[in-house]
Length: 323
Image 1 (spheres, rainbow, N blue to C red):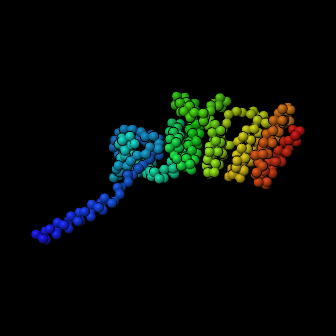
Image 2 (cartoon, rainbow, N blue to C red):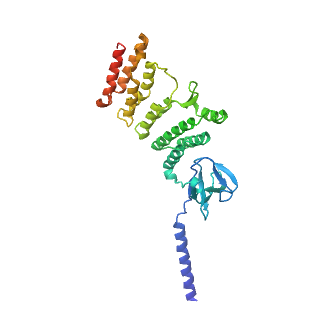
Image 3 (cartoon, rainbow, N blue to C red):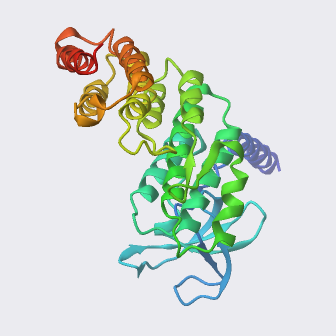
């Protein structure tokens, strides 16, 4: 009997230690995945022939529940199928190539990678492009860290422009107009070119918002090179005004920026003298001299050796117009 009591006590102690060890072990973190394309099919069974139960927007975060034993090749890509649960609780199987692993701590990097991969597809239809822009808008609005928000905001507006590029006569107005109007005052419709454009003022304001961060310079260059409304029809003062508010403004903000040389090249091309400037009336010449003065201010802080040619061109243009 004493022996049995000793065995019983020992078992109780061992069970207690085991319980404490199990209690101390943290629960395994759920694996997460994210859709890296638009319209990812959620199927009832693993396989390309499985019944489609839903389609998921790009950027949908799902919980991984199970992985298929075998891999399958779909669209030239080989991967497993994964049984997942959507944020709404719907379950189904998705092809692994369309749902890479997702770690919340690396969310910004993942979002940017997905966006850049999608925007590399020149054949993507408008609806897929708009889906990407909508997704990036949502994540930007949720991001509290300024540096992270800047990275996401930059790809968001590039995605918006990418979406606008896909609008053509082949895309029904009912498909794109509601989306374009939901962008509010950020977009403008150009009657002259018959296209929707991102207002450059929006991009310049974002440069100011994120100034000091690497993305600010990128916003400035995007603003300087974005298509704009209007056509100068060979009127030189107008052409100089357009370049002054674009590349000129970039140089005022980033005279030593990575795109400074390209900005100077574009300005130099706009300073080409032709017969039209000799035909300007008094008001036209005054306008031209005003724009030249503004451009001089734009290149004021640029390195002397870089702006030498431009200053010579400005001098020659003044001389040709009696300035």
